[in-house]
Length: 301
Image (cartoon, rainbow, N blue to C red; front, side):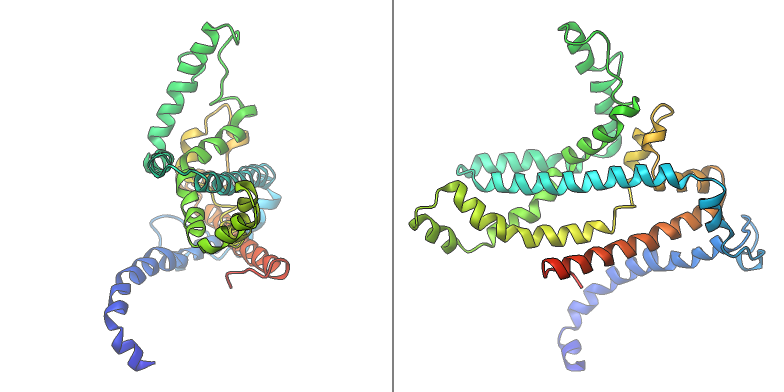
């Protein structure tokens, strides 16, 4: 073991910065969880604060009752986004594999990958310019054509909030999510397709009986990894698209924690909600991994 470490010392040295970054920003902040168990006040030493125990955790379920709509919004949006993102990426990779013109395929992949590099503030500005009720380009066009009588409030009407936020995420992450599936397809031995073609299989049959089964393990692994993020939402995305008219359908746990922690300065309560979210997320990923191991034989640990 020591000999191996000495022989690969340069590789281990290259890992040191990454390990330090992860430790500093992912593990050191865990000491701040102590705030949830005391009556913490800014400006006073943390460990001299009065002990409160599980009071803040109980308040989330007994006093506020906010967990009802928060869990509804968070789970509905994130599960829907998970299914939509993985499903569209899976289908997109299959279709990309059937394109025979390499230049055309590279062009499509570049175009679909580009939105991933656009910040959410730019995406919100574009969405406002396109879907604003009175001045949005799409609403104005539909009204002028006589298809609708008045502009549709896509950004503010709660009826459209979940569908819109999921679709805008699919558009942004489609190219990025499909890269792993495209790489998995590239690793499938070409002999499989050649043998199937000799046996008389057409393109659809080769895709259905060769490509799809070889992509299922990748899909299962991605499903397990992403299941741990079901309670985590993209803060910037929801912060921009949540407003006073749709907040009942758009406020998720991350926005709720931000509101109580940084706006209302109730640090113990916000920290307690964050701890519960983390613990439940760990439980979900372990549960999904166990179910996957027993049903499909595929797991990450």
